[in-house]
Image 1 (tube, rainbow, N blue to C red):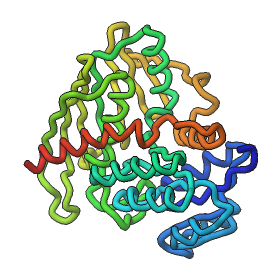
Image 2 (image 1 turned 90 degrees about the horizontal axis):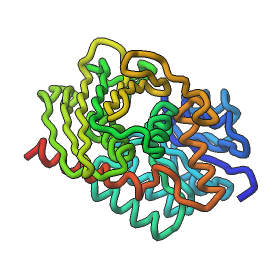
Image 3 (image 1 turned 180 degrees about the vertical axis):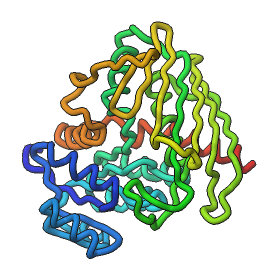
Image 4 (image 1 turned 180 degrees about the horizontal axis):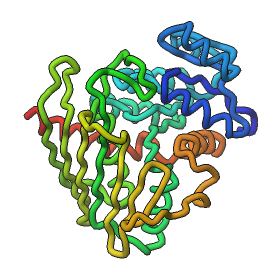
Length: 318
């Protein structure tokens, strides 16, 4: 595929804008349609980025012959059904994390992806952040082996707000959304499947209906372990902090930045063509479409993560 890849992007909120910013740096790609919940707000974003077609209906965008691919930055509960709609309309699709919040729906997405042969990728951004890529290169070069990953995912979100401080139309989830990043990254970095997983959670919030605190333990087949703490109650810096404890060193990853265990900064600027994990994720999506290959973070590659989340959910509700 040598022509310009024409993209429809659904979800003009905080994360959709991150994708629009990243795509501006990628040659041969044009966003031609923007889908949002509120037409006026969506049109405002579309005008800013020079996007001609605006709608509140994904199906309207899927009906556009010129659209080759779709990026879904919509509420979690819509992800699986919208991914299926894109594949059935003959469009390549990248869906933001999580692929699903019901495991059998994720299995159905994989079945349809195999049937269509289209590129279907999930936004497991940690696979693409330069900090985690740097560690991955060390592991592949056999210079570093993970013994433990210690991860903290912390937010202060006692009301239903997004990253821009705007009211959300849906409720976020520690297990299906935020834990998905770490569960997938742990297995990916270890190059070994997760064979044991345990979880406990704090009280359910009376109005949001979700647990605001959670603790997860994982063990990979190769013996590595992972300890993950998640909270929506933490009054402090927002985000996820990863400590890689290995046989030849300790590394601290904070999004696209990386430090040694002694807080010495590591230069990761040469790891990839950009320092922006979202842009690198999008570059992989479009490269896979052009090259007719399976992308890193394909539905097939990440589905085992959702099996683990499903098993943990059964434990928590058991």
